[in-house]
Image 1 (cartoon, rainbow over the protein chains, first blue to last red):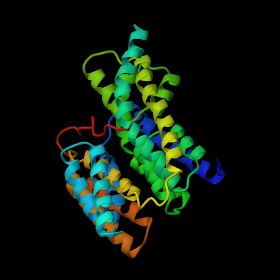
Image 2: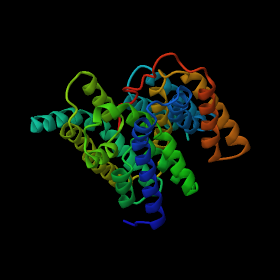
Image 3: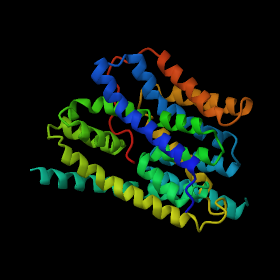
Image 4: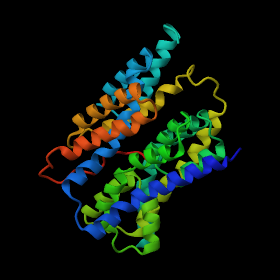
Length: 102
Length: 238
Protein backbone atom coordinates (compact mmCIF):
# COMPACT_ATOMS: atom_id res chain seq x y z
CA UNK A 1 0.00 0.00 0.00
CA UNK A 2 2.56 2.55 -1.10
CA UNK A 3 1.47 6.17 -0.93
CA UNK A 4 3.70 8.15 -3.22
CA UNK A 5 3.92 11.82 -2.20
CA UNK A 6 4.16 13.07 -5.76
CA UNK A 7 1.13 11.03 -6.79
CA UNK A 8 -0.80 12.24 -3.75
CA UNK A 9 -0.04 15.85 -4.66
CA UNK A 10 -1.23 15.33 -8.23
CA UNK A 11 -4.44 13.78 -6.92
CA UNK A 12 -5.00 16.68 -4.53
CA UNK A 13 -4.40 19.13 -7.39
CA UNK A 14 -6.87 17.19 -9.53
CA UNK A 15 -9.41 17.32 -6.71
CA UNK A 16 -8.95 21.07 -6.33
CA UNK A 17 -9.31 21.54 -10.11
CA UNK A 18 -12.49 19.48 -10.11
CA UNK A 19 -13.88 21.44 -7.19
CA UNK A 20 -13.03 24.69 -8.96
CA UNK A 21 -15.16 23.68 -11.94
CA UNK A 22 -18.03 22.66 -9.67
CA UNK A 23 -18.10 25.99 -7.85
CA UNK A 24 -16.95 28.09 -10.83
CA UNK A 25 -20.25 28.28 -12.67
CA UNK A 26 -22.07 29.32 -9.52
CA UNK A 27 -19.60 32.12 -8.89
CA UNK A 28 -19.77 33.09 -12.56
CA UNK A 29 -23.56 33.51 -12.66
CA UNK A 30 -23.84 35.14 -9.26
CA UNK A 31 -21.27 37.77 -10.26
CA UNK A 32 -21.80 38.07 -14.04
CA UNK A 33 -25.56 37.45 -14.10
CA UNK A 34 -25.29 36.07 -17.64
CA UNK A 35 -22.63 34.13 -19.54
CA UNK A 36 -22.04 35.47 -23.10
CA UNK A 37 -23.42 33.03 -25.70
CA UNK A 38 -20.09 32.42 -27.42
CA UNK A 39 -18.39 31.72 -24.11
CA UNK A 40 -21.19 29.36 -23.19
CA UNK A 41 -20.85 27.59 -26.56
CA UNK A 42 -17.11 27.23 -26.00
CA UNK A 43 -17.59 25.95 -22.44
CA UNK A 44 -20.24 23.50 -23.62
CA UNK A 45 -17.85 22.11 -26.24
CA UNK A 46 -14.95 21.52 -23.84
CA UNK A 47 -15.73 18.00 -22.55
CA UNK A 48 -16.64 16.49 -25.93
CA UNK A 49 -13.57 18.07 -27.53
CA UNK A 50 -11.20 16.77 -24.84
CA UNK A 51 -12.64 13.28 -24.67
CA UNK A 52 -12.60 12.96 -28.47
CA UNK A 53 -8.85 13.53 -28.44
CA UNK A 54 -8.46 10.56 -26.08
CA UNK A 55 -10.47 8.24 -28.33
CA UNK A 56 -9.20 9.35 -31.76
CA UNK A 57 -5.58 8.10 -31.49
CA UNK A 58 -6.77 4.82 -29.95
CA UNK A 59 -8.88 4.37 -33.06
CA UNK A 60 -6.66 5.72 -35.83
CA UNK A 61 -3.31 4.54 -34.51
CA UNK A 62 -4.47 1.49 -32.54
CA UNK A 63 -4.38 -2.11 -33.73
CA UNK A 64 -7.08 -3.56 -35.96
CA UNK A 65 -8.78 -5.35 -33.09
CA UNK A 66 -9.12 -2.01 -31.25
CA UNK A 67 -10.44 -0.28 -34.37
CA UNK A 68 -13.13 -2.89 -34.87
CA UNK A 69 -14.01 -2.94 -31.16
CA UNK A 70 -14.44 0.84 -31.02
CA UNK A 71 -16.50 0.83 -34.20
CA UNK A 72 -18.84 -1.82 -32.79
CA UNK A 73 -18.99 0.10 -29.47
CA UNK A 74 -19.95 3.24 -31.38
CA UNK A 75 -22.85 1.50 -33.11
CA UNK A 76 -23.97 -0.10 -29.85
CA UNK A 77 -23.67 3.20 -28.00
CA UNK A 78 -26.02 4.95 -30.41
CA UNK A 79 -28.78 2.59 -29.28
CA UNK A 80 -28.13 1.39 -25.73
CA UNK A 81 -26.23 2.25 -22.56
CA UNK A 82 -22.54 2.58 -21.73
CA UNK A 83 -22.40 -0.77 -20.01
CA UNK A 84 -23.33 -2.51 -23.26
CA UNK A 85 -20.71 -0.52 -25.17
CA UNK A 86 -18.01 -1.77 -22.83
CA UNK A 87 -19.29 -5.33 -23.06
CA UNK A 88 -19.45 -5.17 -26.87
CA UNK A 89 -15.94 -3.71 -27.21
CA UNK A 90 -14.58 -6.29 -24.80
CA UNK A 91 -16.26 -9.18 -26.64
CA UNK A 92 -14.81 -7.99 -29.96
CA UNK A 93 -11.19 -7.77 -28.75
CA UNK A 94 -11.44 -11.04 -26.85
CA UNK A 95 -13.01 -12.75 -29.86
CA UNK A 96 -10.33 -11.35 -32.15
CA UNK A 97 -7.40 -12.19 -29.87
CA UNK A 98 -8.54 -15.72 -29.22
CA UNK A 99 -9.25 -16.55 -32.87
CA UNK A 100 -6.97 -14.39 -35.05
CA UNK A 101 -4.35 -13.75 -32.36
CA UNK A 102 -2.89 -10.81 -30.43
CA UNK B 1 -40.46 16.61 6.61
CA UNK B 2 -36.70 16.88 6.48
CA UNK B 3 -36.29 13.22 7.42
CA UNK B 4 -38.71 12.28 4.62
CA UNK B 5 -36.68 14.45 2.24
CA UNK B 6 -33.48 12.69 3.27
CA UNK B 7 -34.96 9.25 2.61
CA UNK B 8 -36.42 10.49 -0.63
CA UNK B 9 -32.89 11.49 -1.65
CA UNK B 10 -31.44 8.17 -0.56
CA UNK B 11 -34.03 6.34 -2.63
CA UNK B 12 -33.35 8.37 -5.76
CA UNK B 13 -29.58 8.22 -5.37
CA UNK B 14 -29.42 4.48 -4.76
CA UNK B 15 -30.47 3.80 -8.36
CA UNK B 16 -27.58 5.95 -9.56
CA UNK B 17 -25.21 4.19 -7.13
CA UNK B 18 -26.17 0.84 -8.62
CA UNK B 19 -25.76 2.04 -12.20
CA UNK B 20 -22.35 3.57 -11.54
CA UNK B 21 -20.95 0.68 -9.47
CA UNK B 22 -19.49 -1.19 -12.48
CA UNK B 23 -17.68 1.99 -13.55
CA UNK B 24 -16.30 2.53 -10.07
CA UNK B 25 -14.97 -1.02 -10.03
CA UNK B 26 -13.55 -0.54 -13.53
CA UNK B 27 -11.82 2.63 -12.40
CA UNK B 28 -10.23 0.79 -9.46
CA UNK B 29 -9.03 -2.10 -11.59
CA UNK B 30 -7.58 0.14 -14.32
CA UNK B 31 -5.98 2.48 -11.79
CA UNK B 32 -4.09 -0.38 -10.17
CA UNK B 33 -3.26 -1.71 -13.61
CA UNK B 34 -1.79 1.70 -14.50
CA UNK B 35 0.52 1.60 -11.51
CA UNK B 36 -1.46 3.28 -8.74
CA UNK B 37 -1.54 1.73 -5.27
CA UNK B 38 -4.81 0.80 -3.57
CA UNK B 39 -4.44 3.72 -1.18
CA UNK B 40 -3.90 6.18 -4.04
CA UNK B 41 -6.82 4.73 -6.00
CA UNK B 42 -9.20 5.06 -3.06
CA UNK B 43 -7.84 8.50 -2.21
CA UNK B 44 -8.49 9.64 -5.77
CA UNK B 45 -12.09 8.40 -5.77
CA UNK B 46 -12.72 10.05 -2.41
CA UNK B 47 -11.24 13.44 -3.30
CA UNK B 48 -11.68 13.95 -7.05
CA UNK B 49 -15.04 12.14 -7.14
CA UNK B 50 -15.87 12.51 -10.83
CA UNK B 51 -15.83 9.33 -12.90
CA UNK B 52 -14.73 10.56 -16.31
CA UNK B 53 -11.93 12.76 -15.04
CA UNK B 54 -10.66 10.00 -12.75
CA UNK B 55 -10.42 7.79 -15.83
CA UNK B 56 -8.59 10.53 -17.72
CA UNK B 57 -6.21 10.87 -14.79
CA UNK B 58 -5.23 7.22 -14.75
CA UNK B 59 -4.99 7.09 -18.54
CA UNK B 60 -2.39 9.88 -18.39
CA UNK B 61 -0.62 8.50 -15.28
CA UNK B 62 -0.01 5.40 -17.37
CA UNK B 63 1.71 7.48 -20.05
CA UNK B 64 4.18 9.28 -17.78
CA UNK B 65 2.71 12.67 -18.56
CA UNK B 66 3.79 15.77 -16.63
CA UNK B 67 1.68 16.54 -13.58
CA UNK B 68 0.37 19.93 -14.67
CA UNK B 69 -0.88 18.47 -17.93
CA UNK B 70 -2.77 15.74 -16.06
CA UNK B 71 -4.40 18.35 -13.86
CA UNK B 72 -5.20 20.51 -16.91
CA UNK B 73 -6.82 17.58 -18.71
CA UNK B 74 -8.89 16.70 -15.64
CA UNK B 75 -9.92 20.32 -15.37
CA UNK B 76 -10.97 20.30 -19.02
CA UNK B 77 -13.01 17.12 -18.78
CA UNK B 78 -14.79 18.53 -15.75
CA UNK B 79 -15.56 21.79 -17.44
CA UNK B 80 -19.15 20.75 -17.83
CA UNK B 81 -19.41 21.20 -14.05
CA UNK B 82 -19.02 24.95 -14.63
CA UNK B 83 -22.24 24.88 -16.61
CA UNK B 84 -23.92 22.61 -14.07
CA UNK B 85 -23.23 24.84 -11.12
CA UNK B 86 -24.32 27.87 -13.15
CA UNK B 87 -27.63 26.18 -13.97
CA UNK B 88 -28.03 25.00 -10.39
CA UNK B 89 -27.66 28.46 -8.86
CA UNK B 90 -31.38 29.38 -8.71
CA UNK B 91 -32.24 26.20 -6.82
CA UNK B 92 -29.56 26.32 -4.12
CA UNK B 93 -29.53 30.02 -3.28
CA UNK B 94 -31.12 29.32 0.11
CA UNK B 95 -28.37 26.87 1.20
CA UNK B 96 -25.93 28.08 3.87
CA UNK B 97 -22.25 28.55 2.86
CA UNK B 98 -21.22 25.27 4.50
CA UNK B 99 -24.10 23.48 2.80
CA UNK B 100 -22.99 24.97 -0.51
CA UNK B 101 -19.47 23.70 0.10
CA UNK B 102 -20.75 20.11 0.23
CA UNK B 103 -23.24 20.76 -2.54
CA UNK B 104 -20.46 21.55 -5.00
CA UNK B 105 -18.32 18.66 -3.84
CA UNK B 106 -21.14 16.18 -4.48
CA UNK B 107 -22.08 17.73 -7.82
CA UNK B 108 -21.79 14.91 -10.36
CA UNK B 109 -23.80 14.40 -13.54
CA UNK B 110 -26.85 12.55 -12.17
CA UNK B 111 -26.90 14.73 -9.07
CA UNK B 112 -27.16 17.78 -11.29
CA UNK B 113 -29.83 16.28 -13.55
CA UNK B 114 -32.02 15.17 -10.64
CA UNK B 115 -31.71 18.45 -8.76
CA UNK B 116 -32.75 20.52 -11.76
CA UNK B 117 -35.58 18.09 -12.52
CA UNK B 118 -36.80 18.35 -8.95
CA UNK B 119 -36.55 22.12 -8.92
CA UNK B 120 -38.36 22.50 -12.24
CA UNK B 121 -41.14 20.18 -11.09
CA UNK B 122 -41.77 22.60 -8.23
CA UNK B 123 -40.69 20.17 -5.52
CA UNK B 124 -38.59 21.69 -2.73
CA UNK B 125 -34.82 21.30 -3.25
CA UNK B 126 -33.72 21.01 0.37
CA UNK B 127 -30.17 20.39 1.50
CA UNK B 128 -31.12 17.17 3.31
CA UNK B 129 -32.63 15.80 0.12
CA UNK B 130 -29.51 16.79 -1.83
CA UNK B 131 -27.25 15.29 0.83
CA UNK B 132 -29.22 12.04 0.94
CA UNK B 133 -29.06 11.75 -2.84
CA UNK B 134 -25.35 12.54 -2.94
CA UNK B 135 -24.09 10.48 -0.01
CA UNK B 136 -25.70 7.26 -1.24
CA UNK B 137 -23.76 7.66 -4.51
CA UNK B 138 -20.50 8.88 -2.96
CA UNK B 139 -19.89 6.21 -0.31
CA UNK B 140 -20.49 3.19 -2.60
CA UNK B 141 -18.40 4.86 -5.35
CA UNK B 142 -15.36 5.04 -3.06
CA UNK B 143 -15.86 1.52 -1.69
CA UNK B 144 -16.46 -0.04 -5.09
CA UNK B 145 -13.33 1.54 -6.57
CA UNK B 146 -11.31 0.08 -3.69
CA UNK B 147 -12.92 -3.28 -4.39
CA UNK B 148 -12.12 -3.00 -8.11
CA UNK B 149 -8.54 -2.11 -7.23
CA UNK B 150 -8.22 -5.20 -5.03
CA UNK B 151 -9.47 -7.38 -7.89
CA UNK B 152 -7.25 -5.51 -10.34
CA UNK B 153 -4.08 -6.43 -8.47
CA UNK B 154 -4.70 -10.10 -9.35
CA UNK B 155 -4.83 -9.34 -13.07
CA UNK B 156 -1.75 -10.34 -15.05
CA UNK B 157 -1.37 -9.08 -18.62
CA UNK B 158 -4.26 -6.64 -19.17
CA UNK B 159 -4.22 -7.24 -22.92
CA UNK B 160 -4.81 -10.97 -22.64
CA UNK B 161 -8.11 -10.33 -20.88
CA UNK B 162 -9.05 -7.35 -23.04
CA UNK B 163 -8.79 -4.66 -20.35
CA UNK B 164 -6.95 -2.22 -22.63
CA UNK B 165 -10.01 -1.58 -24.82
CA UNK B 166 -12.26 -0.55 -21.92
CA UNK B 167 -10.81 2.92 -21.34
CA UNK B 168 -11.17 4.16 -24.95
CA UNK B 169 -14.61 2.54 -25.16
CA UNK B 170 -15.59 4.29 -21.93
CA UNK B 171 -14.42 7.66 -23.28
CA UNK B 172 -16.27 7.02 -26.53
CA UNK B 173 -19.45 6.47 -24.52
CA UNK B 174 -19.12 9.82 -22.82
CA UNK B 175 -18.40 11.54 -26.13
CA UNK B 176 -21.65 10.04 -27.46
CA UNK B 177 -23.54 11.44 -24.47
CA UNK B 178 -22.85 14.91 -25.79
CA UNK B 179 -24.12 14.16 -29.29
CA UNK B 180 -27.33 16.18 -28.87
CA UNK B 181 -25.47 19.39 -28.11
CA UNK B 182 -25.13 22.15 -30.67
CA UNK B 183 -22.31 21.69 -33.16
CA UNK B 184 -21.43 18.31 -31.69
CA UNK B 185 -20.40 16.67 -34.98
CA UNK B 186 -18.12 19.44 -36.28
CA UNK B 187 -16.53 19.87 -32.83
CA UNK B 188 -15.87 16.15 -32.42
CA UNK B 189 -14.63 15.78 -36.01
CA UNK B 190 -12.24 18.72 -35.81
CA UNK B 191 -10.95 17.64 -32.40
CA UNK B 192 -10.38 14.10 -33.67
CA UNK B 193 -8.53 15.20 -36.80
CA UNK B 194 -6.45 17.78 -34.93
CA UNK B 195 -5.61 15.24 -32.23
CA UNK B 196 -4.40 12.66 -34.73
CA UNK B 197 -2.33 15.25 -36.60
CA UNK B 198 -0.83 16.52 -33.33
CA UNK B 199 -0.17 12.96 -32.23
CA UNK B 200 1.87 12.39 -35.39
CA UNK B 201 3.74 15.67 -35.63
CA UNK B 202 4.00 16.97 -32.05
CA UNK B 203 3.59 13.78 -30.06
CA UNK B 204 1.70 12.58 -27.01
CA UNK B 205 0.39 14.08 -24.71
CA UNK B 206 0.08 17.32 -26.68
CA UNK B 207 -2.56 15.82 -28.94
CA UNK B 208 -5.00 16.21 -26.03
CA UNK B 209 -4.64 19.96 -25.54
CA UNK B 210 -4.09 20.81 -29.22
CA UNK B 211 -6.98 18.64 -30.43
CA UNK B 212 -9.33 19.96 -27.77
CA UNK B 213 -8.34 23.56 -28.45
CA UNK B 214 -9.22 23.14 -32.13
CA UNK B 215 -12.70 21.87 -31.29
CA UNK B 216 -13.35 24.52 -28.64
CA UNK B 217 -12.25 27.39 -30.88
CA UNK B 218 -14.51 26.06 -33.61
CA UNK B 219 -17.46 25.99 -31.18
CA UNK B 220 -16.83 29.60 -30.17
CA UNK B 221 -16.64 30.69 -33.82
CA UNK B 222 -20.01 29.21 -34.77
CA UNK B 223 -22.90 31.69 -34.69
CA UNK B 224 -24.47 31.47 -31.21
CA UNK B 225 -27.65 29.37 -31.12
CA UNK B 226 -30.91 31.32 -30.78
CA UNK B 227 -32.12 29.07 -27.94
CA UNK B 228 -30.71 28.18 -24.55
CA UNK B 229 -28.34 25.25 -24.53
CA UNK B 230 -29.93 22.06 -23.31
CA UNK B 231 -27.80 20.95 -20.39
CA UNK B 232 -29.81 18.40 -18.53
CA UNK B 233 -29.19 14.70 -18.35
CA UNK B 234 -26.32 14.47 -20.79
CA UNK B 235 -24.70 11.89 -18.61
CA UNK B 236 -25.93 9.34 -16.18
CA UNK B 237 -22.89 8.12 -14.34
CA UNK B 238 -20.81 9.63 -11.58
